[in-house]
Image 1 (tube, rainbow, N blue to C red):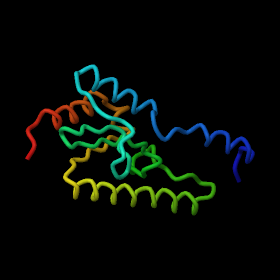
Image 2: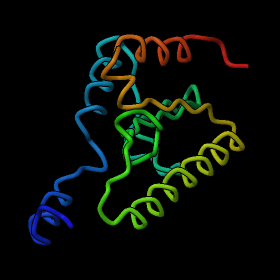
Image 3: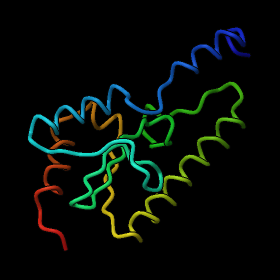
Image 4: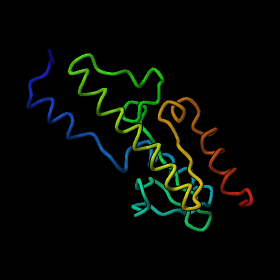
Length: 137
């Protein structure tokens, strides 16, 4: 049984952003301050959070819960468990398909995870910086 009323739960869920999240903004600011320019609101498959068209690099900033990362932040809720397992599994499958599709189009894909950003943001920025500054194959 849910502790919140249906209306309150609906209100809470409506406040969850799908773009321009605080994590995305932190990553964008860090990259911008290092001189990297990117595009947002891309029409590429999966709508990457950041796109570096000249380098053909797509960056996804994923929340651990919504994309079933497997860390401590990605626990499945105990209420309506079947619904959440089905929904989150579909998200994960879609992510894999989008990554395959982008790679088939010649794009390099970087996935940043919420827990890793919180743990050590500078290491994650370094990962992206390394790919952006390394010569393409």
